[in-house]
Structures are given as C-alpha cells and as structure tokens.
Image 1: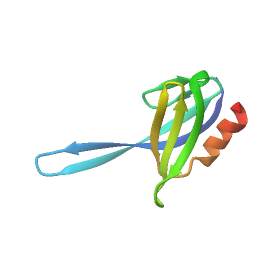
Image 2: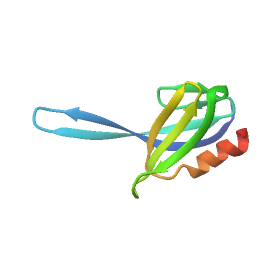
Image 3: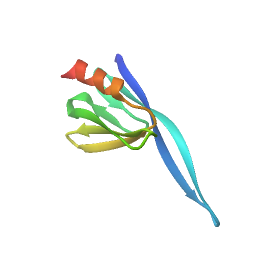
Length: 93
C-alpha cells in the first residue's frame, strides 16, 4: 500500500447548548493510495473512484468532491486541493 497524495479537510461539528450554538472544527486528512482512498470514517476501493473535483467558495477554501460509482462525497477544505487532484489524475488516468 503506497501513499500517492494526501490533503487536509475539515469536519464541522455543531453543538447547541441552552443558550448558544458552538462550531467545533475537526481537521482530518484524506489519503490517496494505489488501491484505495481513505477518509476518517470511509474507505473507497480505487476501482469505484471515478474522479475528484474542487469548487472554490470565497477566499476561504472550498469543497473537494470525491466522485464514485456509489455517489458523490463532499469534503470541506481550507486550501486548494489541486496538487491532490493532479496526483490522482496523473496516476490513474
């Protein structure tokens, strides 16, 4: 299992108390291996991954889209994942 690329993403947890709502950011990493893509709670065999794409939102990062045969999964990112996407496309396309 050889690592090709990795990129950080953010999971936002919202907690509501009696008087306020608090947002807690958890920084996680998406890993691209020769045979699979791994996130904090999911693992995708590379044969079901069809592409990655990115949509910038303002100047604060954007959304990384993981396209699979099972559907599209979204990951909030604070920095551009272009190097990650390029690594995927060069290796698998």
